[in-house]
Image (tube, rainbow, N blue to C red; front, side):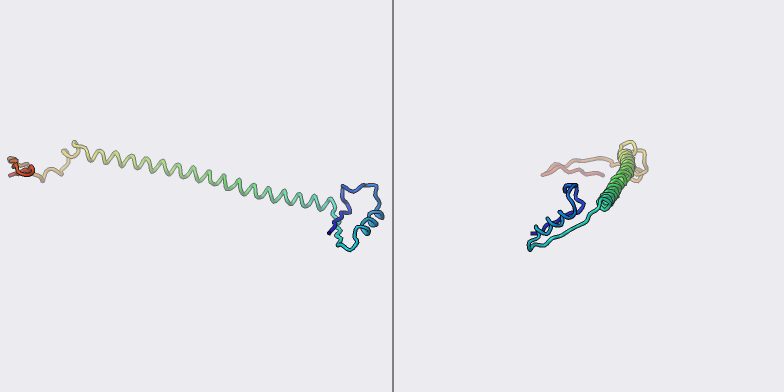
Length: 131
């Protein structure tokens, strides 16, 4: 069994002398290993300050990533709006080109000629014949 004793432990009775502490340590040893650490409050405070600094850096990195994603989201939203406007303009242009008024006013119909007479032949199916 391993015993760990802290020389500056706050749990230990402050009135206990160093001599009685050593005697207790010797009597508890009885063939088992004994580890003794001298941890001063300066080391504990240094460790806590270092831990707080590391956690602060990690928090700042995380916050920076979230803020960067916000800017990226705004940029993508603006891009989406621009693409939607372009799509709406193209849909409007396509509807205008497909309208009958535009077709009649364009020069696409000028090379076409009108048929003279139309005859319908009745057979298995309806057929049209133009002269």
